[in-house]
Amino acid sequence: MKTAIFKSMLFFAVVLVCFTACKDRAAEKRIAELESRLAEVEGKKPTTTNVPAPNPTVAAPEEKPEGPLPVIQFETTEHDFGTIKEGDIVEYVYKVKNTGEAPLIIQGAQPSCGCTVPDFTKEPIPVGGTGYVKAKFDSNGKQNVQNKTITVSANTWPKQTVLRFKAMITPKAGSTAPAAH
Image (cartoon, rainbow, N blue to C red):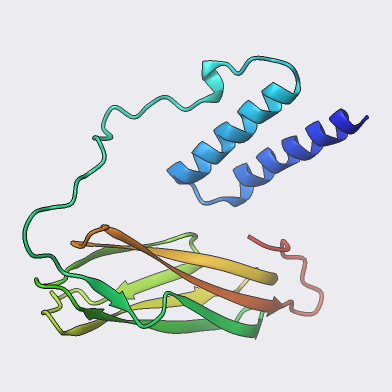
């Protein structure tokens, strides 16, 4: 009985990840891990169909470049919008400082879902200079606690920094939006 309940819960988790996660390699990897775990619980050996095929275009892990590098320093990498109403659009600006030894170039900012629109300093940030990464979050169709991320890529080491924000969203009267993403 416990095994059947566990299998059902594990299956539900796999389905939930499939439908609620943004499409990225991390989500695909997690799905494969959950499918493998489900096969293990069912007493089956995991097959190669449960594991994503290696991507031939993925190179070996990058090594730290030689020479002077910029260093991206954020005043904070986390923000709490507090309680907002469903449908509100809120913004937060993460302040950036280049504390390294070379100009800082923010190459991109990838949100964890389509409800977040990032913006960032496009020009090189000189040594000692400042810039920003802005997060614009649209809470339309969202309810309860929302945790989102923006992955910032730059010419730093490591190349990526993850910014996080959260909000508690009170639903509109009569709203039937999904609980959390």
